[in-house]
Length: 411
Image 1 (cartoon, one colour):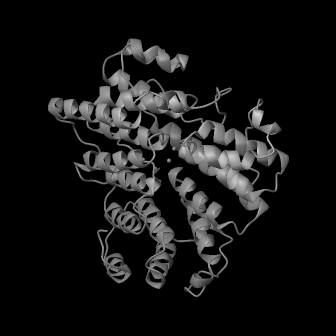
Image 2 (tube, rainbow, N blue to C red):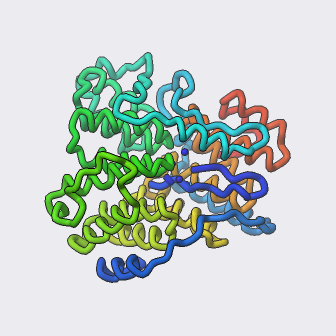
């Protein structure tokens, strides 16, 4: 579950607000550090009773129509998911019981989440045409940047099956799964990347984010601190080089302070501000997380993942208009990468949090048209349909057939 990249579903009474999945409000690092030192932790984002948004729903419907007209004139996004997926991913075990009281089930599963590089075997697809491709890695990169994640995943799988010690291929495989809203599988691949090369700093950063999305704070802090240790310019920060073999010995405040110091050393390092945003999401200091992501976006305004993380942070905040604010950030992410599954899911969650379940369903279906094997997205869709009192459609989610909904929804 990527906290909205940092995504949970909202219940009909909005009492279970989205745990948004991730992926310049400040002038410089000194001002940022000053704000950090004086900050008090904000409260966790809470749901609220949604008012009537009939006018807003019409406006949102029109915005979606215009967005699709501009970015998907031929309706190709839903067909670009790539090769047909196989069996349901065994690591996507998030589900919602009929009572919709899913929180206890989720936390029980998290308590049993296995850790370590070999905790779970990576679930390779049985059929993979890229196994015969000598340039599978290069083709995987092309497919990834084109947003064709299903094919990119197959290409990277082929590379690591031929060469299990290829750390970069494992890392890109994990990143592709994360962008496909599959953090559990991403973690397995990223751990294999580090097993092959413990100094792969991109894998360290991505693992920290994925563990944050899965709400496993100990591992998140461990990998984010390790990321600092592998940067020569940050090794002099107090505490960075100290061993942290015991996960419980790492305190959130200590790691956050290290990254504040790193931001003072290099106020142009987009990764440092990205990590600060992730860390403040962990501690639910959403105002400071938002500032961090805004600073990261100032440094790198075309990074679609940062826009998604900013939107997720806004959605998770305690502000009543947080979900509405988040939509603008998600829309920017989708303008930069129209087939970004995670942002489509987060858009749906934000609309669900406003009580716009019809529109939320359309965004979930759009995401499912690109990743039809995502069990948790089907669960979000079922909840929204139930909130619409469309039990007939909710029952259809069991079929996992996206096309079964095209008579009712345009997406």
